[in-house]
Image (cartoon, rainbow over all chains, first blue to last red; front, side):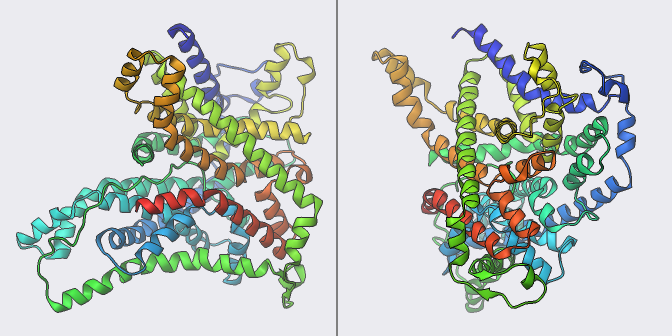
Length: 271
Length: 322
C-alpha cells in the first residue's frame, strides 16, 4: 500500500471519528430555523449561542453542585485509602497480603451491573438512597481496586534504599518516608486522582439506579434533556448541554491520558 | 464503571525490602507488625461494606422469593434454586442471555478488527496524518458516554438526523424519515456503531503502542534471511504484540458483556424494551422496574459468574506477577 493511499485512508478514519465531536459543537450554535432546515447546516459558527443560555439554568447548576460534591468526596477518600493500602502492600510483608492483592484484582473485574440490585437494596435499607453519602460510598468502592493497584505500582517503583539512606542520615522511618518517597509519589497520586475524578464525573449506571429525578448528577441531567418532555427535542439546547458537560473533562483527559495508557502497554509487553 | 480505563500497569521489578533494615527497638518492631493491618483496614472495610456485603446479600436473595410483597414487609420466602430454574427454563431470559452474548461477541470482534486495522494503518502514515488521526481518536475517546449518546441520537434522528439525510443523498430514498430504533436489528446496529466508535480509540492506541515495540532490527535481519512479509508478521510481529492483544480483547469482551448505559439510553430514545434488553438492562428492569429482586439477583449472579469465568486466567496471570 503506497503512502498516499494510506494517508487518504487515515484521513477517512479521522473524519469518521471527529465528525460526531464536531457535530456536537456545531449543532449547539444553530438557531431554531436552521435546525429544521431541509439540508443540515454544516458551518454554523457565527450563528447563535442562545442555546447555551437556555440550558444554563438552575437545574444545571444544581446537578453541577451535586456532581462536584460527589466527585470531590470520591477522589479525596479513594486517594487517602488507596495510598495507605498501597504502602502496606508494597512496603510490608504480612499475613493476608497475597489474599488482599488477589481480592483487589478480582473485584476490579466485577461489573457494576452484576451488583447494583443488592447495592440498591442495601442503600434503601440504610435510608441512603438518593443521597450524596450513598452514591459516594458506591463510587469510592468502585474506584478503590484500581487506584490501589496503580498506586502500589508507583510505590514499588521507588527504591526503599532511598529511605534507608535517609535513615542512616538520622531520619526516622516515617520522616524518611515523607521526605524521600512521598514527593516521588506525587505523579502517581495525580494519575490516580485523575482516574477517580473521571470515573465519578462520567458515571451513569449507578447514578441511574441510586438517585431520583429530583437529585441528578450531571450525566443524568444531560440525559434528562432528551427525555424530559413530550415536546420536540431542543437539539441545539441538548448539544449545548453536551458541550458544557463534555468539553472540560475532555480537555482534562487529553492532558493526562498519556501517563495512564503507557502503564498498560509497558506492563503487557514486558509481561 | 465506565470504559475509560486501561488495565492496571504491571508492577515494576521488586526489591527485597528487608535486606538492609537498620536496627530497631522492640516497640517499633511490634508497631511494624501491626502497622500493615492498620493501613489496609479502611480499604478492607470499605470494600466489605460496599461490595462484599451486597454480594453476599445478592446471593441470599437469589435463593429467595423476594418481590413486591417483601418490599412491603413480608418475610422473604426461601425457594432454593427456583429462581435459577426459572432463569434457565424461561425463553425470555434465554433470549436476553443469547442476545447479550451475540452482541458482546460481535462488538468485541468488530472493535478489535477495526482497532487493529487503525493501529496498523497508523504505522504507515506520514507524520502529520498520524498526528491528525491520533488527536481525533483521543477526542472521541475522551467523550463522556452520555454526551456521546446524545450526539449519536441526534445523528440518527428520524427527521433531521444527518445520517438519514446523507443516505437519501447517496440514493437510498427509503431512508427519508427512517426510524432507526424501532426494529430490534436496526436498534442493535445503532448500538454497535456507537459502542465501536467509543471503543476503537483505546484499542487502536494500545495496539499501536505495542506495534512500535516490535524490533526493527529483528525484522531487517529476518528480511535479509529471506523471510517474506507474511512470515515476518507471523513470526516476529505477532509474538511481540500478542500479550497486548490478549489483554485488550479480554477487556473488550468484559466491557461489551456488561454494556448498560448505551442500551438503556437508546431504549429511552425509542427502542422497544422487550426485544432489546441485554443482561444489564434486564437486571435493571427486573429489579428496579418490577421489584422482582429475587429473579434480578439470580440473573446478576449468573452475570458475575460469567465474568469471573472469562477473566480468571487474566487475574491469575496478574497475581503471579505480584
